[in-house]
Image 1 (tube, one colour):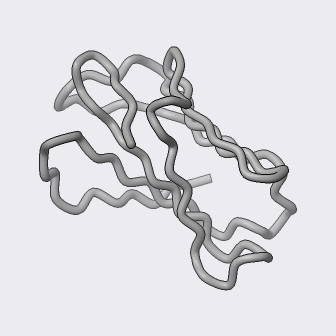
Image 2: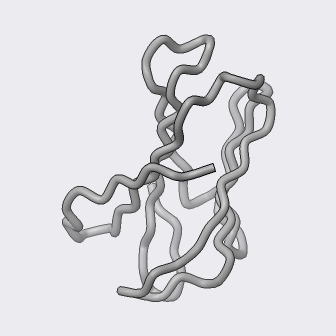
Length: 100
């Protein structure tokens, strides 16, 4: 799934590593239907993952965003990695590990 910003389709995959309930990394997709005015989020049970763009992303330009997690116990998440995809375009491997 994807989010549309300024003619560019962005997709997001978050890898939540070492969650208590999941012995392997957990993948969360933020579908287009959950994107509104620069904010994408999804919720499962009591856990919520939100991605907020600090400014509107533009094609071929760096952009800043914040990922917030709610409903996770301390120590549940060991790392977050983000990958963006454009619809109809092979962008190659673009997996980024986020810093706290």
